[in-house]
Length: 468
Image 1 (spheres, one colour):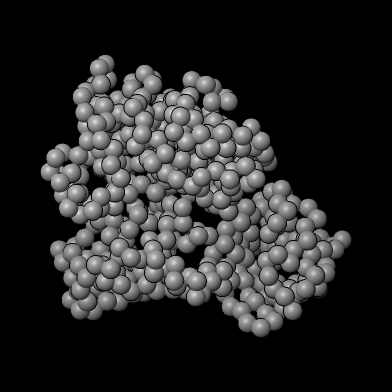
Image 2: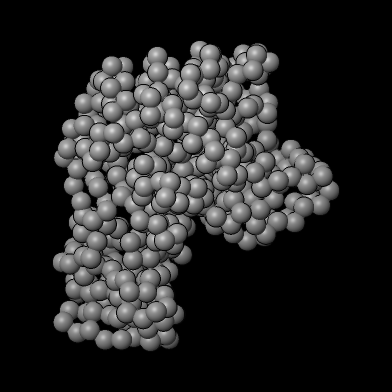
């Protein structure tokens, strides 16, 4: 069973990657998201079962949209809060073991880039032999440089009966620069953070080395609740689990660790420089994506998610431009970007920024706002509809700019074509829907004393929501 871990906000790729729309769901590589690319690697149902996705509750609709676009069916295990990879792996193992105690799990990170699918499948086949024998197999990557951002693995003796698989003699976390250089010289491999292991093996080792995580995961999975393919882990149990990585909780301690050297290309899309390497650099060392013009510049990484970015005579810079924010930094300073982004977002809430907020019916963008008013662009997908709702503190004016909207106001339902407007009085029970084959687009102007997203009373909802 493939298990795809989709947690994390990817703040090192700010401002493109945000808490509300993190990097694994953005079309950053070859016009596709790394989550979609991961789904494609395990799409052959003669080799893999349908995947289990482990993600944050706030990202469930991003996952569902990507699954729908890819034509993939999956179950989605929802974490109420981020507790790092140990809790995610433990929950997946407990979930799989309830279905089949003999399940073999292929743990994959959603933000890694692998283009060589044939090599990936060969490596998985080798790892499967070792996982069947009770080993926890990690996929090791031959280093290209003494990177300090990865863990390292020293291979021991070959594992009998498992060609290409070795025992792990040393499993080391991220080193300093001098230690990394020594590891590379000694033939260590990078730890990719992808694993293959039995569900029962995972739970046994977690019980041995991280009993609170094992017990919490098993209790949370036993109490999991729907609806549909959304399987929500209860916060009262899950949030009490220690937050730590699977590497630290198990891999550094277990005697069952084995490693197969990957036969595929691999890149952890964790930094702007790694994205630049994936997208390629020109003869002057520049990497560009989006609408970018470079002249007389060297060793720059420039990413334009919105609008044109023109760079003249610059050297060693990162420039990342999103709809509402621009980051300019020297590439040498990117090691401290996570702390810097924390300072920035503490000063300006991301919730105040112009961003696309994905919902199960489509998405909306906040275009403008000020005291007493807010303007949104709302896109409702074909066949979808918003909840039947009312607002205590605001009225709304809708202008349909695309498609024909199905509008409910109190007991009246009518079709509103492009170019027409609708007024929603304060307190009116209303709904926006789309029964056509094309998206419905409206510009919504809200006005009132309070415009927060929590000013919604729902009377009916197709998606089982009780909050925003």
